[in-house]
Length: 322
Ligand code: PCA
Image (cartoon, rainbow, N blue to C red; front, side, top):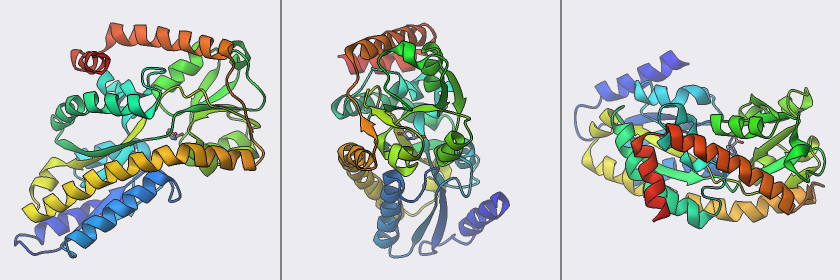
């Protein structure tokens, strides 16, 4: 599969010395077709295809079907594919600047998430440029909430739970809460619960619905702890090789996708929480005691973050707090 993708990409490049030759781009994404991020990206691809009148065709390969989530960023970097989507904070091991949107209780509303992205964007644009990558657009998931098999009244109730995690920050959060985290990709969530590998998780109402959380948990507590983003990046060399009109079509479609994606995300929060309730999930407002305990964990994480984060990463927080 990988071999095929790379050759298709090279063939498209070699065959396009003139201006009007058609380009075909394969675009790997990690999430399934019914997830709003994927729907938004399908629309982005459609818009590019139409605006360029067939000069550029972007084909979306969803749910990790072309590259696994963990491979997508490096696949774009090494030009195995020219474009791809991934969960931005997964890159926090490269630089804390990438992970700031997944730090608990730094930005918990869409307004704050927007301000954070505004501060983060120029910084990560520069970091990605060092790897020959260019961000096109980023879209947040709805605020992250807690899924459990019973009501959780305080952090003590999380002790010992086998906890599903999707990045390093969530792993740290779960560990500090006394739980035992395991990394599980979102398409594998139902299986992980069914086999007892995990018994609780923190994620959005979107992922709660796409994984049919009512099949394996009883309670959703909207702790709204952070608003993490997916990002779409393009290989800069591949982009630079395009006709100016095609480049412009991509940039326009990307700007539209960012605006549309944020609106979709806002609408999802209520819609998907309602679907969970309809399917029998108990939606419980968090107790003050639980929130206090979770905020204390967040504060501890932020302290550690401050002690190790790069200057670039810290400049994001400084700008965000201005
Ligand atoms: N869904 C993705 C990432 C954050 C979210 O809301 C997941 O659970 O993997």
